Amino acid sequence: MLLTGNHSKGIESMIARMNIPNTLIKLELEWTGSPKDINEHFQAVVDKLVKATLITFLNLNLDFTRFNDEGCASIAQLLQSSKTVSSFFIEMSISRITDIGLSYIAFELPFIPLRELGLSLCKTKITDQGIISLSQTFRRTSSKLHYILLRIDGTFISDTGIMALIDALTCLRTLTKLVLSLGE
Figure 1: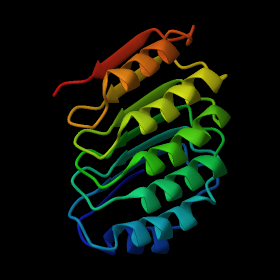
Figure 2 (figure 1 turned 90 degrees about the horizontal axis):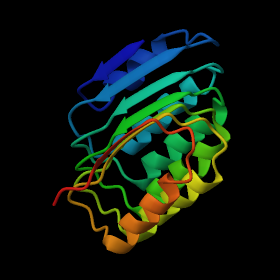
Figure 3 (figure 1 turned 60 degrees about the vertical axis):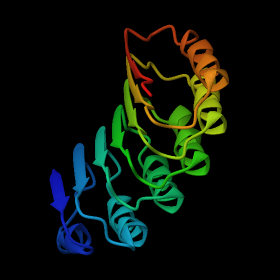
Figure 4 (figure 1 turned 180 degrees about the vertical axis):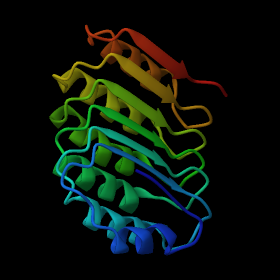
């Protein structure tokens, strides 16, 4: 299921009219435009989607939006309700998330059977604190992560955060592919 909306209630109204199956396997959600209340609308979408108990592939594209930590709490709620996500990709570049929002998502990751993880956080307000929180998640995870894509260009992460991340990634014995973008 691919959902795309370009105004404040586009996706929300589409989902409200749909009968979401309990075994939704693949969800790709792309939000274009940037309504001021995107986080409230996203929460309404999540409230409807938590009925889907079997989501194995989750791809969220929230680039260039006013998406913030409140929206990340909604993503964490969706991950918590569906413990079957094995592929999770989220694009949040040039959004308004901070370390708090990243920690909401990172907290839920060890509890799902992830095999693939993609986080695009370019030009956000993520600092060492957020990346260390994510690094601690990698140390706690019992999942069989094979693939990680992490884009953190243009954030406020120093060498301290990068070293914590690299140290944690070396603990992942099942990792076969790592794409790490750290540019300026």
